[in-house]
Image (cartoon, rainbow, N blue to C red):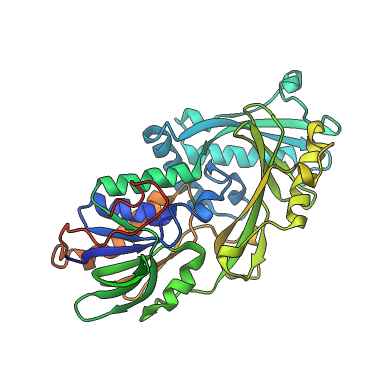
Length: 402
């Protein structure tokens, strides 16, 4: 049995899935090592949106917004069963911190970045005569309503689809499997991992650390470790409420000015998100009562249907972790671009990927491929297509296609 591959990808969230897909599509042999399950952490706990990130214009992240809007178009064209356009509504009130002119300016720039000839870039101010089409929206102090379009997805289903695509291109997956250690030698990267209660070893030409909130922990098990800039874990909570607001997504302001999404999800209403520093084990992240109350109050401020609800009416809540660069700025103002670090700029053997957006996973994967190509093209594949030891997993047969 051969245990040699071109690349080991650690993590089967959306970034690891995207990396494995692009590498396998380019005919490199790839194995994914995942400790919990496909999309088991952050990639199933997002806001379920494929979007450019309108709010990122406020912090000047124009390049990120442009990149995400290009990726949104590709996903709409190529994965219509998973990604669909939906209308977003932004109500402007007398108390709103963002006046109507500023919102119009942001939407105009968003439209421009999306592409002048892109029909999905259109937006408009909703006439007052049509406000009745927004059932339950608070009219007191309402000055204007804007409508634009972005896309929604099932984040976990999208991640599973990308992993399945990678597997169809020849990638293999070990799940559950945990990295014990990785060491760069003269000829290869030696990887020790535990699967099925046994310690195993395999050799690869490179390792890509896409373990999300575990990225620093995984990096610490690598010799030599990659130089990762200081990062923070930031928790974001969502709540699911027993409300039906139709097919519209609302973009509203909480009392502190933070933008909150209120959106249909599985015949209910999903509300999110928050931002707070997190310092514990990523497995243990959970919503706080304060976060749940904060989100519920934001919905009650704008929708009459929610005013009789309390914390006990929350159907479900979940918290995910973002990996953001460490800064004194608030999490809202920090860059959402992926951070890709490597052990050698010319021929890297170890890569660590931190942060990044669900929408732009393909763009991140292309950057990973570009960094690894000097290493991988220096003498094509050492790998064979033999299968590593099977591991037991409660997930589907496709997920453990190893």
